[in-house]
Each structure stands twice: as structure tokens, then as C-alpha cells.
Length: 262
Figure 1 (cartoon, rainbow, N blue to C red):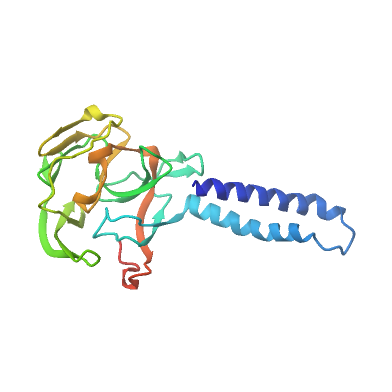
Figure 2: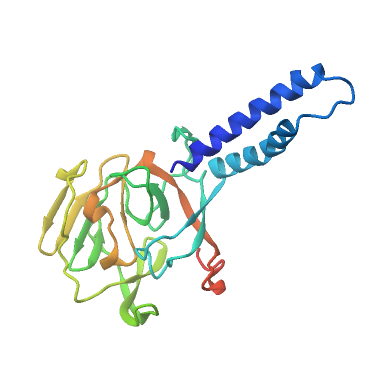
């Protein structure tokens, strides 16, 4: 469901009704006559719908985390806010960038339209920028020939499955974040999609190496062995970016998580 399109249509319809009544129909009614109930009803919704449409189109948009691919950084059920303007101002509905601002940096957690199906929104961490050479071998990541440092932390407890997973602090440029790695999971990438720029990647039994094409990004989930990401379906085009995740504003199961993401 394209919620932005629905909001746009609602804002347009209620705006037309409000404008026709305010600038023309109201002047035709007898003095002292009340507005028709339906005109009053629709007109009262117009500024609210317009404000919501502009807010989520150009400033911030709320999202709910639906899967565990970003554990332990983001948990299923986290409600997050996404900065919509940090990577450039885009026209709503059309998703066309009209103002260039900042570019994504390694370590950013981004929301984007899933390349194989742009009607779906995904969230992952940016690992590779345009021109970067990414190597994922035996569960270790290297960027441009430099292997990312990993420091073992206390194991992560999945309270739903009562299952412990090794946790590591990984440093990506200036961003340090926790990742989960399951030693028993295979290093090779199964079920590889036939994605654009597939020729930029080389797969083997130890993992995958890729050179990120211009205008694209290589993204991965922090839950490394439970994330469908660029290793499987390829690169994220710049035009698919929605924004940068920056804040957990609610979680029904754990209020302590509010504000914990940075």
C-alpha cells in the first residue's frame, strides 16, 4: 500500500473542497447560513491531512521494524523515526530528488525501497559506498582491503527462542555497532538473485566480493546470518533511499528501548 499516494489524494480532494467552499460557494450562500455538514467535516480534515502529508514527506516518517535482521541494534516491534531530508529533498509520490544534501556514510542505518519490489520498505546498515570493494569472507567484512575490527561481547540472548548468539562490536569507519554471528551457519551465500550489476560480484564457498557501482550502496543487516541483504539481492540505488533511521520512539514490549537507538 502506497501510503504517501493515499495521503496525497486525500490532501488534494479535501483541499479542493475547502478551496471551492472558501473562495466561491460560501459567498453564494445566504447571509448567516451554516455550511453544509459535509463541507464543514471535510474542511476540518484538510489542514490535518496536509500537515501530516508534508511532515512525513519532507521531515520525518515513522516505521515499525517487522523482522529481526537488524538485531541487536533494532528489535522486532521497535517504532523508529526516519530523517527524510538528510540525503536530499525528494518529491513525494514521485520520489525524485530535487535538492542534493548529504550522501549516506558507512555505518548509517537506512530505510530504502527494496530493489526487487519497491513497494516494500527495508532497513539495513550501509557497509559500502559507490566505488568501494567489499569482501565478505568467513563471516568477516573487509572494505577496500581493510578488515573491519571485531571485539567479542557478551552473548546475545533471544528471549523468545531462549537461544544465545555470539555478539561482536564491529567498527565501520567512526561507527561502532554490535552484530550477531552464528558460527554454525554457512559462510557461503545461498539463493543468489539475478540482480542488476551482478557481474560486479564474485561468489564462492567462503562468501562474496563485490565492487559497488556508481550511484549504489552495499547494505547488510546486523544480524548477519539472519538477514537478506546486498549479499543476496544486490545493490541499493540512490533513488531507492527513503532516509536515515535515528530514533526509537516506542516499543510496546519494552519501554526502556525508547530513545536507545542513535
